[in-house]
Amino acid sequence: MNESTPRSSPFAEKLRFGTKLAYGLGDLGPAITANILAVFLLIFFTNVAGLSAALAGSVLLIGKVWDAFNDPIVGVLSDRTRSRWGRRLPWIFLGAIPFGLFFFLEWIVPRFSDNPTTNQWGLFWYYVIVAILFNNFYTVVNLPYTALTAEITKDYDERTSLNSFRFGFSIGGSILSLIVALAVFQLIPGDAAQQYMAMAGVCAVLSVLPIFGCVFGIRQRVLAVEHYRVEESAPTETIPIRDQIRIALTNRPYLYVIGIYLCSWLAVQNTVAIIPYFVKSWMGLSEQAFTQVVIAVQVTALIMLFVWAKVSERVGKRVVYFLGMVLWILAEVGLFFLQPGQVGFMYLLAVMAGFGVATAYLVPWSMIPDVIDLDELNTGQRREGVFYSFMLVLQKLGLALGLFLVGQILDRAGFISSVAGQPEPVQPETALTAIRWMIGPLPAVILLVGLILAYLYPITRDRHSQILLQLQERTKQQQAARSPDFADPGFEASIALPPNAELPPTRPQPPSTED
Image (tube, rainbow, N blue to C red; front, side, top):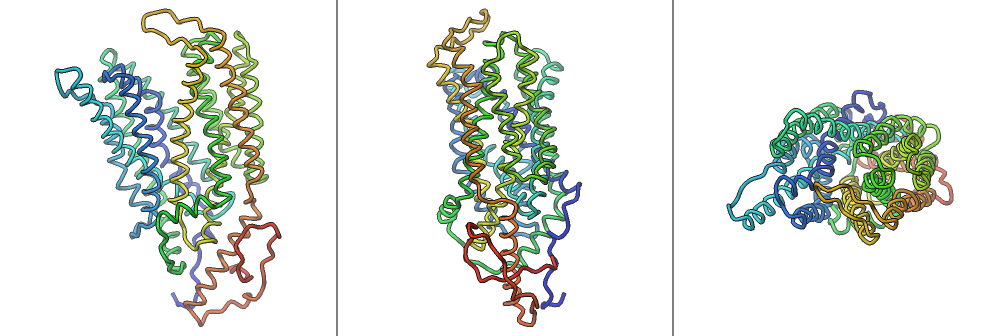
């Protein structure tokens, strides 16, 4: 190619259906493992491995604390990676097998000593080490994967569509993991240790294979985008990690997205944690009914991901978020007033909640790439890993905080724990009231805060278009600086920005229309 000719942008070509499908496939494995760990790991530690409840809880806590340090480190390192496969794919590809291996090792019960106390501590340190290694490779696979959303397309609506595929597979993986667990437990009756080991083996294979399918399915698009980025971006001075984190946390639109996501995720985790108590203690139904309620929410959310993605193309991300949250808030309030015996109404409210849960997954993750574009305009660097790492930290801390709050409130309300082999205790009125407040008004208030933050979020479709125009203008200027013979005859036009646009001042130049 003649050096004076501007390079054709890969973003001119819309994402193909197969590329979206392959990208979504990459979240299947992390969703399977995360759901299995959330549902079964604590009871496996206490009822199968024989750990005390205190030690079992400590294993989970250490893993979450480690993630708070692990995620930003991997994010920055992946931003700085240079290879013929780009910045993200080597991490995903090389981390896939260790990710599955250490997930499997979490479900083995080794024996360290005949002395019960010594064996307890041996098991504790074994599971701590395995948990840390698994969390490392979970981040190595999942964080660069999520960062690709902002890289493989710059289109405002395509990013929403791409995330609908991603979270479609994510929710589908959560449902699939429960089906696999139930099937394994029925096929291997008796020995619980063998049941969990078999379940872990099947889930590990189901988690690793889709990751390779994702890598090879999106490889062509990722390499085209990465090659274009390297060729067309001017060299920039590397910003120290501490300064990168500071810059990210002073990006006002990013802080709004963090708030929106944290409110959404806290509401999700609070509802998931309290539903079993609500269905059993207040509604007087069985555990099977609880499973059916969860499936009703998840299946609805899975379907609505794709519906909301289409609606977003017409009305925008914020409007979709408002619509979903209003339905979810109404569902939460309805659950507060629900009375025992109103089972049909309970399932209707679960479906309504699924409408909102879908937007909690879809919208915040679709906003992040737009924030990253603004950051590139401000700093001249693409730092997807830094921004996505904090989102993943929030997701994990939101889970831990949600479970902690539920436990503390139930304990203070006088909730009576069940005893194996004994009839289900009758809960006091104070505990039942606390359960109803946690299923209704508490998450509704949290969601209302998220709605306010979404209203204040400044990057609309028009604002994002202006950001891309300025980025294209700067790229054109950099091309001209490197190739003096190249000149764009339309270079003297200007870009009109609204007076309230929070973008750094630049010399007005029009973008190239060739891309």
